[in-house]
Image (cartoon, rainbow, N blue to C red; front, top):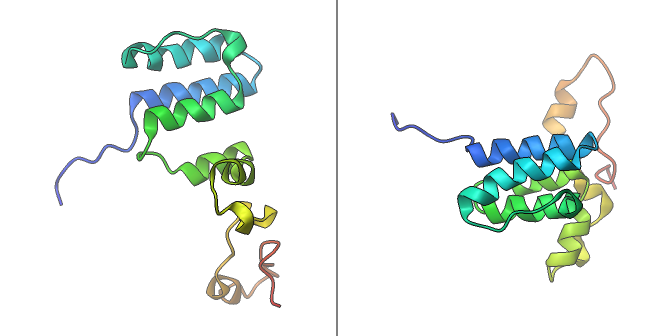
Length: 125
C-alpha cells in the first residue's frame, strides 16, 4: 500500500511534552502545552493547579480517542489496574500482574544462553 499513514499528531506531541513537564515538576509548562491542544479544540484554558496525572490521562483520551494505544499509556503511568477497575464494569478479572503481558514460551525456550524468567503472575501452575 502506498498511502501515507499518520503515526503521530501534533496534539499527541504536546501531550507527551506536558507529561514530561509534569514529571519534572513543571506544572506551569505542562498547562501551557495542554492549552495548545485545548485552544485548537476550542476548549477552555486550564491553569497549573488543574494539571495532574489523572487530568492528563483524561485529556489524552478526549483528544486521542481511538488513535492511541491506551493500554500502553496506562501502563506507562502505572495506572492500568486503577483505571480499569474504576471505569470497567467487568474489572473483577484485573490483577496487579496484568500490568505486564506473559512472555511467550517460545521466546523463553529460544533463549539458551541464560535464564529467562516468565513475568510475575504467569508462571507454570
